Image 1 (cartoon, one colour):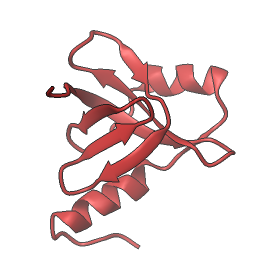
Image 2 (cartoon, one colour):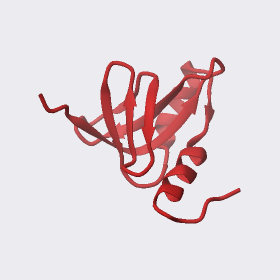
Image 3 (cartoon, one colour):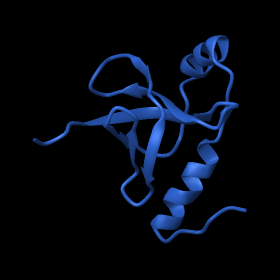
Image 4 (spheres, rainbow, N blue to C red):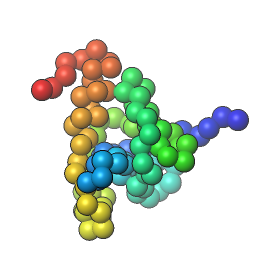
Length: 100
């Protein structure tokens, strides 16, 4: 059975104090913001993320967190934005320069 890949725009990767990582983004399939379950695997070459619960997400474009989404997350959730780390890995997988 083919799994659906959910496309995410205006995404940011957030890391909680316990080390778990999650994505907050806008979903193209649903006209609303989403916060994913814990990230299990990240595939920089395809910009895909697999999360706990066996969901697969496609990160569309570079990180560009939605101001409303980041604010909303900050109201209810303690974490830090580590999107730049994911962006560097994506660029490296594409053969681009990595930022230090």
